[in-house]
Image 1: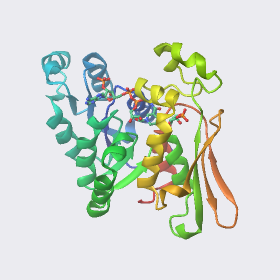
Image 2: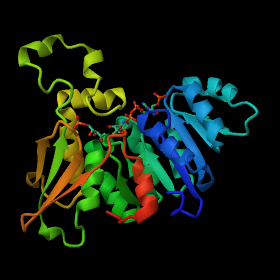
Image 3: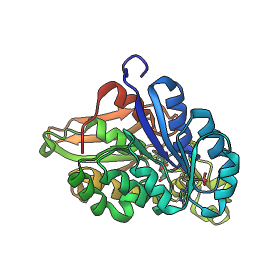
Length: 287
Ligand SMILES: NC(=O)C1=CN([C@@H]2O[C@H](COP(=O)(O)OP(=O)(O)OC[C@H]3O[C@@H](n4cnc5c(N)ncnc54)[C@H](OP(=O)(O)O)[C@@H]3O)[C@@H](O)[C@H]2O)C=CC1
Ligand SMILES: CC(=O)[C@@H](O)[C@H](O)COP(=O)(O)O
């Protein structure tokens, strides 16, 4: 990234204290001169948010839960970092000019700020799949109308994005989302009644936040990803397949009408903010 990205870019990370957020910060801190951090946000984790904001010199730190405003203000006293709190403050942060917005909040709470970033035509790295699950038509309509760019961060969708021929999409016969099968893939059905939350959250291949890890354990994640793929790619739902691939080496595949299959393989270093790396190297194609 360092040699190919010369200009400074600005970034806002929604959900900076989570798994996706921390991975994104790791990437930008590898090349700190090339990034200006506009805003970082969290829900309640004041200590981590304040530490991150000081470390990267963020301009603005936002805590979603207003009960934690005073604690954040105190933690950032003397830093010059603007502090705000509450759901509207998340939206305001997403509206501030920044070249890139990483949508890394978990759950439907990410919808309003992500939509705000989309509506100002931003480049949005979309990890927050629940946005598309709960309001995919609305978000994608806004993407088109406002000239925003969505770059999928979910590993499966990022993989498809890289091998999907958007120019001749009629040549695509189906997309194949890979699924690890989660931690209980080989467990007999009768033993599932006694699994513990600790076992459920221990994904075999990825280190991720609790909610997505549990969704992987129940396979619910693949249902959410199917809906996400339906909104991101120009294909009907019956052309989206799911294939269990326990190693998670192939991140997903696109099959073409001539029978060829293009697969994207990658490391299992958690999360796809490596997309930022990819973006810096190869540019991007609007959806
Ligand atoms: N982790 C991964 O590798 C991958 C994640 N994703 C998707 O990315 C998203 C984030 O996942 P992940 O990073 O694992 O999740 P985490 O639980 O690790 O992090 C969630 C982030 O969202 C913040 N947050 C939680 N609730 C709220 C709320 N109500 N309002 C505002 N902010 C909130 C958290 O703040 P706080 O720390 O204060 O609680 C934290 O910063 C999810 O949609 C997930 O499905 C997709 C592919 C891979
Ligand atoms: C890392 C990532 O993007 C996740 O979506 C992961 O792929 C989930 O794995 P499952 O296939 O177990 O749901």
